[in-house]
Image (cartoon, rainbow, N blue to C red; front, side, top):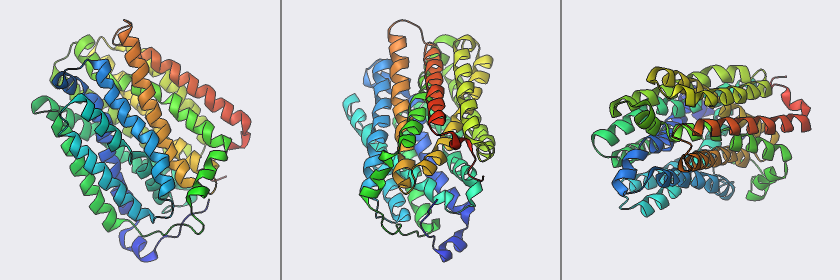
Length: 401
């Protein structure tokens, strides 16, 4: 897999671990805004005078911003140095998240969430390419997993803290917190990340070449469909806790943190397996997600069983790391666009899951019905993965083989 050269002095000065840490802070900021908005849904819905399904469109707007922004910004910036691009993307991210804190109406919040989602996918895609360039080839999933730990830790620390701010003070403080984290990321990446010039021959047209690879589209479809179940459940988790489980509002943040612990444990354990058997690991995670979301309606009546179920649903989120490195393999010389499109796919899932879950609730199937939606989406993702492997059987081999 070709990689852009890394400045020896910058790499030696910071070290791979510190660079990945800087990238992980950005992932923390992005993870906080993506998941905290779901947990803040009851608060901004009440403040802006809208119902929960309508408020769910704010989450979908951010996701659609990612879908649009990931390919657009990555292609347009194909000739930019990775460090420069990462700092610029975080600047845009911090700006629009800060403006979300001042949104005067539902319509303004909808538009600003779309704009704040534009840099998300490009940041993760280019950041993942930088992370894997710093480690041996056989440890790529682990490098990406360490970067993604910023996102998973956000669900343990950032999201519950933002939810607490929304309950104790005002939901707007959650977006202000994210904007500050984005500014911190700009400084850390500018200071620690090595300079890596664009590859010779890099251009928007070469990046667009990724779209000619059928395996790129199939891998994206696995994430776009299979991940929708996780988002369908998580989006309405706060409402389920309040309306079905019957807990007090101050119990919601700890349960959200349990979801984050599941994500974190998954991103620690799964990449090690994925570096050895990527496709079987991905298939196992999709089956796991189908089973765990199917149990969600049964577990919702008790806070302890629901917390255990939420932990196991979060564990399945490690699928993202596997698909990230898989796209780098199948995209050949257009890795930037393919890596960024991974997050377009997941945020398509972030739009699809809440949409279908909200439709199930609106049609009278109950607050826990997104669990069954999640099962269907996970199984559809598994079928898509099966098609991908059938069309290209050698994809079952590990990168180290």
